[in-house]
Length: 402
Image (cartoon, rainbow, N blue to C red; front, top):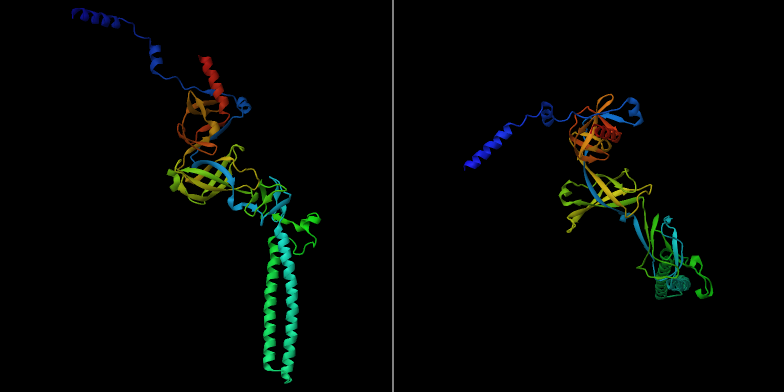
């Protein structure tokens, strides 16, 4: 044990004999560096377009962000089909065309035309025949009445003539109803004239008035055309898809924990990558009744006016849903915040030509502004534009000191 005691005593003696550090060095170890600052003359500030504002507490809206995609408004989208089976003869509309309500998109030929016109002609002939029968029965009834009044005919003959007239009138009414049914099928359903050429279709070229028109049910843009001339189609085929792009939907996915905060009619603003910094006003139209079992999100239908046509279906979009107002807080433009030594900072004007970097704690982002949780006091003058110039000058000064 004695050698260890001697060694410990020697180390203690050596430590005590080392010189004390100088006062300047000791002070440098315990004292932080003096606050750094940047000095810019008024002329330099004007050239750098420095803008300064005094920050004041402001209440900002509480917002919820959700991503999604833009789709067509299904309530303003129409899938146009044929009213019967037939062959497309002419196509007038193409994808991207704007069409008006009632505009003819295509025309088709169908055997239904010939069958219905043949039935129409038959019904016309039957009505003409029964009108003649009804006129004869009326004359017979009138003659029987006169003979009965002159005591030259029996009551039975007069009553029989009356019955024959009523039967003829009923048959004529039924025939006229059949004629009107066939006429409406041609004129209103097939939308072609009831009267057509007498010669067979094979002997003459197709006339437009003898082809069934396929019309746009409403004004909009043609999004899809699924038919070409010569195609045979049925009544279940979607030939065109038309949508009014002045009104769109955004389908946003909102996390389950935010569901209780959502209400139909809430204000929303939508942003897309195609227009940086631009917001499109909208509102919540419908909240889905069930969650996605995979993502645990609920689909929110945002109704999005698009009168100028700037937005397009299938764009990816970001929605900010306004939930209410928050407590007053300090906000500065995002441009005012710079990263210095790995921490967010802003430049505060402490004198007309002097700017001091101030580390801050940032919070939520509201539009182009960011919340400052700590590091600033109300009324302080903050550089809101051109702070990157001050950061550059600060970096140069730091390099010169080193």
